[in-house]
Amino acid sequence: MAQFEIWREIRFEAAHRLPRVPPGHRCHRLHGHSYTVRVYVRGEIDPELGWFMDLEALKALLEPIRERLDHRLLNEIEGLENPTSENLARWVWNHLEPLLPPNTKLSRVEVMETPSSGCRYEGD
Picture 1: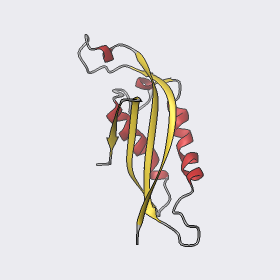
Picture 2: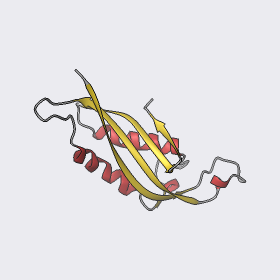
Picture 3: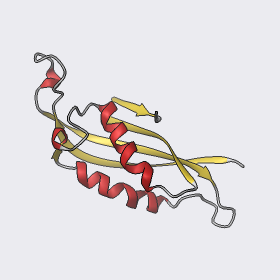
Picture 4: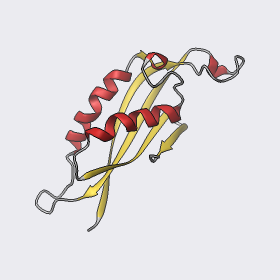
């Protein structure tokens, strides 16, 4: 059966510093970003409903994650002590994946720190 993929974005403001880069690196200093995180979920559509997951249901699953990150110092959140985009993408994946319904599969998480830079994570 055909697989479809839907996506949903969350946006939040947060500060961080990267403690493992050299002290002279600009990211070693405390700074903030207007983050955009887009998650992609894959599944087979239900012929009756015409979808495999309601986008509003995905939004509801993402809201507690967004609230945990919004207007926070990411370094203080368990699992984000070194909050690179890569680690943030994996953190979102690990918090969202167990919440998804059985007929869906998380396929990727994208984290954009700025409109022109970010990362993509497709699971381990």
